[in-house]
Length: 67
Image (cartoon, rainbow, N blue to C red):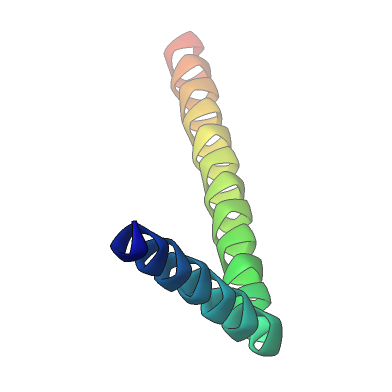
C-alpha cells in the first residue's frame, strides 16, 4: 500500500510541476497557439484563392469556346 501511495504522490507532484511550468511560461504556449491559428487561417485563405483561380480558369475556357 505504501508503494501505491508513493506512485500516486509522484504522479501528483509531476502534474504540479507541469502546471507550474505552464504558469510561468504561458507566453510560449500562447505564441504556439497563435502561430497555429495563423497557420490555419493562411491555409484557408490559400484554399479560397486556389478555388477562385479554378473558377476563373473555367470561365476563361468557357468564354474561349463560345468565340
